[in-house]
Image (cartoon, rainbow, N blue to C red):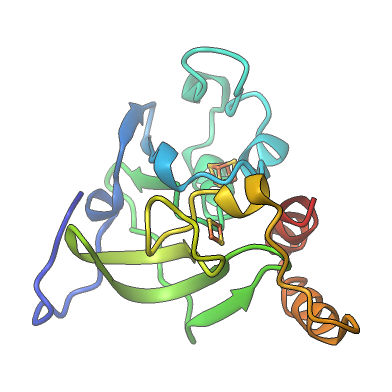
Length: 183
Ligand code: SF4
Ligand code: FES
């Protein structure tokens, strides 16, 4: 895991964000950190020829000619489990302004120029899902445990739930995530 000092000012470049297992294709590398995947499957829906969870390797970059298209779909991963580095291309630009979106019955998802304190040190990020059920084994990140234990963010009367659902529908990817994570 890449770490940076708090005094470091530059935004992370693509290679800084690669974490976990790295898959290298023509023009783009994609990394996958399984500990941060909540299986909401934006990647699978976005590029089913590349992201094939039933096969090994499950990321098959040779099936998509456009490195930009791969990057576009990786950016829909709300948890930061997936990252990319375009070979010689620009890094992923952090969202401005930073957004924080509670997912119904799930984590808080963030997008922006993030500096996250973890037990392993400071982590630079552009996308992350943080645990709010309290049961993640990989805090501060969500590891999907909320779904296994049936944790509910809903308040009596459903008002908070409705508000959260509204926030979660700001982007196509997050809309799908909210629906799936709520199951
Ligand atoms: S979009 Fe991200 S969190 Fe969702 S299944 Fe793919 S890698 Fe996992
Ligand atoms: S919110 Fe996902 S593990 Fe806690």
